[in-house]
Amino acid sequence: MTPEMDNAFDAIRAEYGTDSIARVEEMLALGGGGDRHPSQKGAKWILPGISPVPWHDPHGHSEIAPFVKELEANHPAIKDELAVAWADRREAFSDYEHYLTRQQNWQALYLYRGGRLVPDSAAAVPTAHRVLREFAVETGKICPLLECHFSTLLPGAAIAPHCDLWNFSINLHLAVDIPDGCSITVAGETRSWDEGHCLLFDYSFEHKARNDGVRPRTCLLVDLWHPETTQPERRALVALITEVRRLMGEA
Image (tube, rainbow, N blue to C red; front, top):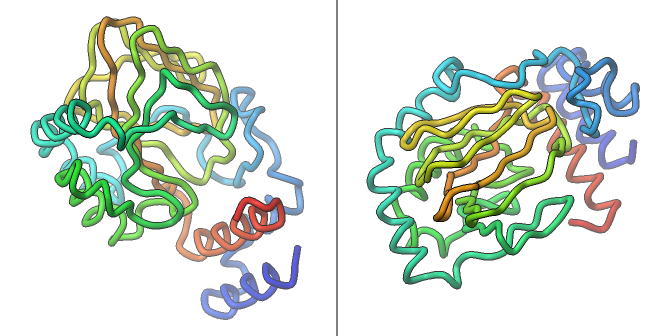
């Protein structure tokens, strides 16, 4: 713990109560979290008490369901605007830089990054940008430590099995443009995307994806707070990870 983290945690306890961030403190005391599912072994941080469930019903959490409903209702416009952007604004896409790797056959168009909306994407994909802003950013559902982007896997591309860093955020996929031959596997269970609908999974579990189709596969990916985290925990986790990144020279 640094003085900055101590001060941030003290302020949260003063506002919400002495036990309000006990799970975050337990995670730190245990050096990244205690017992975990075998498929979460590669994750760095496991917040105790989060249900070890790989796949979630995207409509099953009251906090997330309104956002899911709005994304799915606006899928036709989102898909049309994405197609125009892919054809006419290819410079807006970049190689996706995952914390483990960078892939040229995995392209990304960012809507939210570095704790803020990406202004340029509002012109390229206005419907997705509006829905994200109104239903995830302004409501505090998005995890500001991470991002939202259109994720385009080119034909033949594969994402190797990996765990993401923690379990206190959760990954939502809107299936925007899905050719035959695409799949995603989480904790050993393989599913395919249903165009116009969402998938929701805990990406602290090992997962992989591939596009064996003949055209690009695109989903809108959004990193949301796990619905089992509390407001004081979210504030503490932002303070923690921001300070860790600063100490590592990433901020």
